Each structure stands twice: as structure tokens, then as C-alpha cells.
Length: 103
View 1 (cartoon, rainbow, N blue to C red):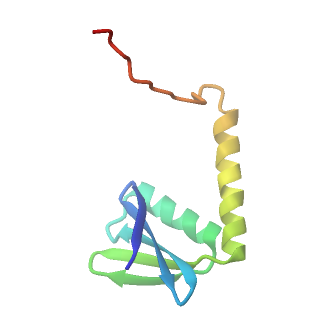
View 2: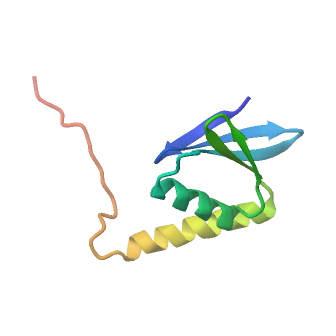
């Protein structure tokens, strides 16, 4: 049974345990938008070797989460954080607190 971790731009990312190993599952629609294609390509380059298959109207990537994949994930997170941090117009922190109204 897979646990859905999140969704973005038509892609769904899941996690599943198989024989004591974590497997990352990425589902993309066969009719890819440009964003989907870029995400799939980026995942392939960053996460490395993946088993690719088709299920219905989806393309499914399965990546075993090993030490090498983990290192690539950390490097990607660091890179994306740095890119966002260095953007001169990016809001670094968006915080919305509920406004309390006095009775």
C-alpha cells in the first residue's frame, strides 16, 4: 500500500515499503504538459536510475531510496533553497497569522 506524499502540477509522489526498503513512486499523466515533462526529466536526472512503467493513463517511475538517491535529494533541496534565497524579489517568508477580533 502506497502513502501519498504530495501532488504538484499533475504529478503525484508516493512512498512505499518493499522488503524493508523505501521506494519512491512518481506518477505522471501520459498526456504531459510542459511542467510535467520538466518535472519528470528533473526527477530522472536527480534521482538516478528508475524503473519506468505505464499504468492506465499514467507513466510511473519507481526509485529505490538508497544512500545515493538521498545524497541527490539533499543536494537538490540545497540548490533550490539557494536559488530562492538569492532571488532579489522573492518573499523569503510568508506568514499569515489569524487575526483575533476582540468580543
